[in-house]
Length: 258
Length: 310
Image (cartoon, rainbow over all chains, first blue to last red):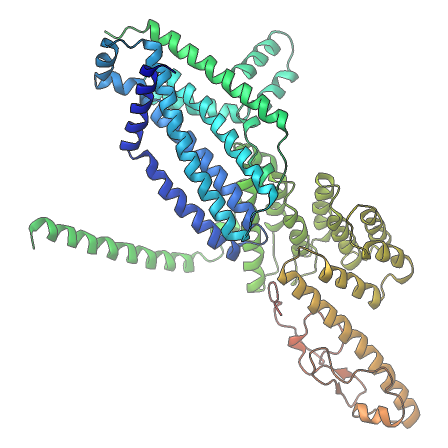
């Protein structure tokens, strides 16, 4: 990574921290400690399951919300505040600006996920009083959640590069929801014929496959995550987010900023 | 005090006052709208729809529905209600959201199957629930045990019970009692000894909660009482045939050499009462839930406790 991208990424991270994004960790901590203490009293036999399911779901949803709501403002905010012109008047290329923003927000989300992951394991230890070998699979689920963030961040950034914040949020969130149903979308495509089939299949492959990155329920039951799934999901998330990032760079390159 | 501090103090006091008042009013509203509380309504009754709406976070949704099922059953049970309309749908949604949530099959079938007021009195629905569990978790011997248990205890379908136990006994890690139960079922279906064996298996099974063990202990005690009462009443009948009158205590039976193998007290240590008409009664029937014999005439059992403890 060149120094200009690193600087933009570092500034994006700093700005997110200054915007009190990491305050969500307090809510998360309260949620986890509340769940760990209360669930044993109001339910039967699911203390550990709730800690993993609730913890990982919260990590995922908090991260998605941050990715969308920070991501949509990454470009438009700079234009509104006119700071973008200051940045681009220096020897910074437009693509470097987009890539730097992407890495900055991704870094914020990774730090956030790390803190939350520690919280999940702490709550797990509180309810189980020990760690089991199968608990290590929670790390795989956390890794997949980070991959999910790469995709959502790139989408938010893409929409932010040409649309208003409100519409960008709507588009990014819609794609997150559709992506959660991506296997159904592919199922619908398989049921159609002719041109509709081609269009439906194309749509199914264009929308992000978020469902394949959600293994929360499986790891909550101590299920193992196959190594090839980790590799393939990593490849998919990197390729998809790179593809969207390229699209964002392409749009931003041609955008009239006057 | 500065004007701004004064405003802050007044608004804080008003905030607390309004919050307290709204809570009190809501309490009154709940009293007026009794029976119309949120838990009596299921916004999403289709398991498939619930799964779609969870956006892939099915594990957490299943945990929420399971907790709701537990609260629903516990609340109705504690009030001694006879209706459990939402229990079945809640359990079905839970298990469709997370088919691996074994606790929902094991406890859920125990909520659904027993006759009212102990359970919801829906053994067929419990059978379907456990069958779905077996379909989703074919290597879990406990589910076959639960299925056989419902067939045996609630539906009295001994051949179906024997088949469930037989299938479960072939699985690796199955409890050693499983093949014994399957084999014994053919000849001893309906016996107290058979029921005792099954409750003992429940008690000894690993990974079960204290409440389940306590429930098994309560049933084992009840079986012991039923057996004791049968044996004592046989002895009192024989005593009357020999002497022309009923015995007033175990001492009378002992004097005639008829007390061999008879227990003078129930498993909690309270002596059995010898009634003038030859019946045997327990001293404290309320302490012995699930007994079918030895209760005073016209006895009405109290509402069963939810998840009894030792």
